[in-house]
Length: 304
Image: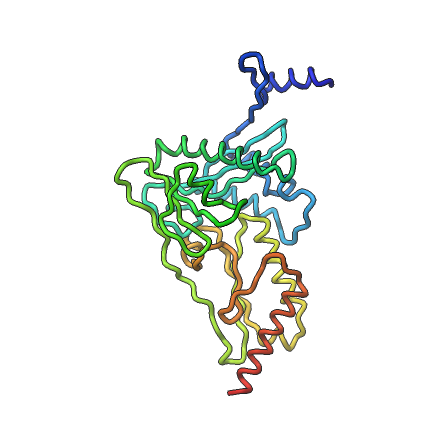
């Protein structure tokens, strides 16, 4: 197929429109359903996972979204040239799996776009802005406002990006900000529920409490949870006997509230109350870290 035939096909399919005689690139945004939820780029086979190796059962990413759809989640999957490249999700605040209280409002859950040219951040941000604007326009007539969490991160929910879309910072803890875009005047502002989780410290018993959280919403979270489990499984038996492993799932609103920490995230790990890094760490590094914490516990007990 030559370039002319390809362009004609794209115009016919609606992927390209013609304005004043010039072709203009457009996108096929389809409402999120249980039938197409598996097309989301963070699901198995999606562009976000392409070329990467993950551990854990990634089918949970699809199953979680199917359950969220039944609980009121809505959104769009966006296709370009027949390939799913982006998505956006939102749902009523009372059911959204964030520790956000916002009566009558909705919560912007997740959005992402993988550009044709990897690393083209201008295109990524432009398409993500377009998708979030679709949610704002749709939610404005049905909810009192739209809440979300912004991050000091250029890729993941960047705070300046959300401010450009009309969101304001309500409160902030470290690198995470609760953000709000009201749709009506005198609407009650949202709030983050108090941090309800305090990690256990079993050092007085000569034990190491490892508590972790993970969520099926994200393949990276599932991967990190699987790495932690692998690290623990590979420890010497005498070390395993002194460890109490307590994993917690953060897949629902109630779980997000129950296991809320500050700054909030859906994945974390603590060893006797001290944070364990989960990102960009190998299994052997995790094992060394855990064994070091165990040695410290042993020394504290020995010192009385």
